[in-house]
Image 1 (cartoon, rainbow over the protein chains, first blue to last red):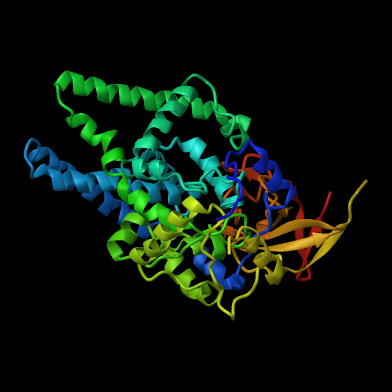
Image 2 (image 1 turned 90 degrees about the vertical axis):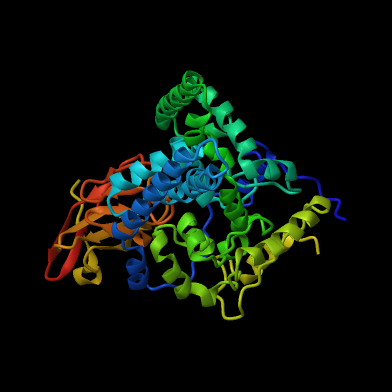
Length: 365
Length: 105
């Protein structure tokens, strides 16, 4: 077992200074060779796919929510609320994400509208998470810099389990919303939210609290939990699928490497999962070229796959790697899964030797 | 002091509705060609995190940063939304004899 000490994952601790000193903050990341013409074609925006998907999405809300209402009070309502919950508490993860990048739709107001709706549903304050995700892309899985590392090493298993039903996330969300509504940010948030954006954070937090207060009032007035089954609670009872997909993105892989092929996973998923997750299973591709919209990620995957480690054939295959890795990290926080680049692959901007050395720095073996 | 027009290469090296890099005296610039063959020039690095805009995506008169999708109107330099909050510097451009000339102040 390693004697390495546990690292500080906060954005305001010593690891943040170390990352900057090591040149890992705002660094140059590896980019596979793709011609400008090919990339331009891949980046091209369309409204059609996202409008189609969003109409299906809204229709699924109406059908599942409608039947849930119709069968309310009987066991027959359960499957409809399971569907409604996954739509509300999980599929909003990818909608928030894609529309936050403003790539899902060609028309910007559509991106912004779906972004606001999805943010509310998944309990992510839009301004905070826009800036948090910006940092996540600048410094992906760089300890002390990335605010979206899902769990540290050793892994926080209790929090992961609580978040199957978004319990920890929800507590953190409300604690922060109350703070923001009073006109304050946390110390960490102040490191990535610019001063000019902060009034928007405070205003949104007050609107969110007003909506949740209205839902609670409706529950009291009608003496029923039903209003909260549609607004608020589905983030919890339907949040499991977002965690199921989100865990596959980076968990168990290398930290502090400047190559998304080494710290991210591309996982093949079935069409229903890909609809709910809006192709974010192509996560290596998304991180390397975040300007490519979700509907073009399968083509981008084909274009660069010879330069990337092999994708995982299924989410189950990914979990066969992730769960043992987390178990091992409980005893040995320096352990991680080493992704092997194909022999034909180009090496990172720092060169193969440096990239491998950086990976090896954190290796237990 | 009046700055000279700088030759930035053949105008047709930039595809329609696209962007290309240009470096002069160690500074980076981005050159744009619209779908209707108008040319523009801006500073080459995003005002958010100094990423090269020449790797970005052009749609209409918008350049989108390749790293965080920050957006600018390259005809005016105006930042069009977070994370791009600070406007880009812009420079006059003209085409003479098939060459793209930029006036760098």
